[in-house]
Length: 137
Image (tube, rainbow, N blue to C red; front, side, top):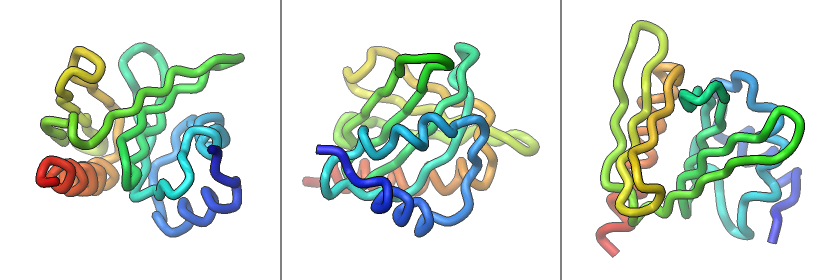
């Protein structure tokens, strides 16, 4: 069941500053993607390597990579934390890459480039914590 826009806005406000590079459509679609009781821990924007900007959202239940089409359609991928083998942050001067290794979720590793360095470090920390907790259950 979708979450209300007000709930999502409040959760995003609690997250604080994050990089929002051309992800307005994805942010607007977030209430329809989140489940009841799902809370946003952190989010950032990046580039998927296929000429698309994406919104990367770490919730208390899963990691989402959202890509809304320019005119219509979307390509949203969800990764349960117990299927994430590792997440790596590869630092550059101002931006970096997130490399997410999964176990049988989408086949190949997911690489998100052009992630702001400060967001990258925080995303790696949040996802690592949730993945570790999911594997220990």
